Length: 577
Image (cartoon, rainbow, N blue to C red):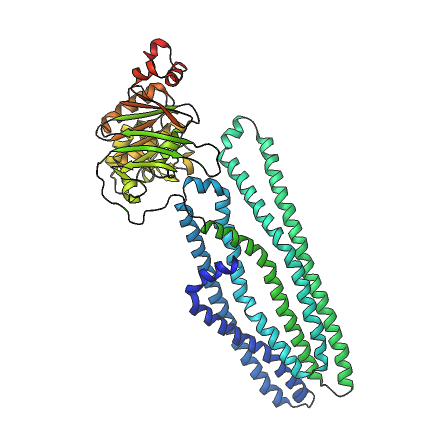
């Protein structure tokens, strides 16, 4: 997966990569040539006392060192830019793919995991690429070049290299193979910590209300300790690598000095050659250590790449139409024919054989017990997820063939749990219509019964709203969400239990104002309160995902037992009549 991901996202950067490899090759060649020059200075300059020779070749070494530094700086520059560009591109594609997901796919991965995959996982891959460009490209060149030049200096002494390199390779391979499953568990436990932390931050008020601080602290402590335990296990294995490599390095250095001394004593080798051989040995070992450092990062990056690719390879169940329809045949008309919805792997469908018709100028209400599929039914219209059976028609066109922009412009949804974005009142209200004027915003607030409390806020329309709208009450959040949809001015309004947090007086005033504002539009209301929907033109009763009754309030009260039970659970016989 890692190779596949890198091949895909590094392809556009072929020219910078070619230049990077060239610069790394040049700087590595310069690094390899310096010990040979040093050996010549020792043997032909220092031993013979030739100062001019020393100064001449010293200047050459200085020039080569300067060229090496410049090449290295250039390679790091291009490597860092390319790695950053790769991280940017992967994050953008993961974000775009997540944005295309329906509620089904988001629920499958979970929000905390998607956040980790978009941030931490991408960062791990980006760091691997950066290290590969700055270290790994030069490592094989240095290793091979060092071996060749060491053989050129003294073949018998090079037998030490034949023993050292395979031992280092075996040690690194054994450790890396054990790291891969550990890093997979590490990323999963990081997901768990993010999930627990997100729940506790979001549900802070509930935790305080039920005085569950101690329980939540213990819950986070367990998740944190699990992550710490796995990090320590991984760290212990990583910590073993460096002492192991350094032990092999030091033993090999001692062996070179020992056997090299005998070679010099017998006249088969010069002092400068031994010095150069030691330098090449260290360069070979350093290249192996750089590769070792890379191999330490590869298992975690491989796991992260698999998690990223899993998101990128997941297709949304809500697929944009290949040839989108841009024109509506019957404006404001909504029809659901035999719709059904089943989650993957579920034994029973959430919805089955649902029929519903909503027309302009009418109010259609949907009511049913908790879990009867009301919110799921409304979610089919704006394509939060697609029906697995039947069809949903907006303006006489199946929503699966309708242009997404036209659908978004035609249908306005106020969700059951209204969400406000960090910013101001005005930025939230203009979310569906960026060109709305202040007068339009105030008008929408007035209809939504939110004008009074917004005008009392410091800054009015420019009053700050925190993420999720946590700095306003639940009722105020619902009214702002309703005003946001009113600013959009769609042809079809969908209210998913959007009045549950309002008191009866505000509820009644809001419904009366909405009736005037949406008189020519199609309105579908999902509600738990009978008082909210009793005056609707049409009431659809859902029970366990099926339509068990359709009609007006008094008709259903007389003929539908399910509706009657719901009504009498809230009202007396006299109030119901």
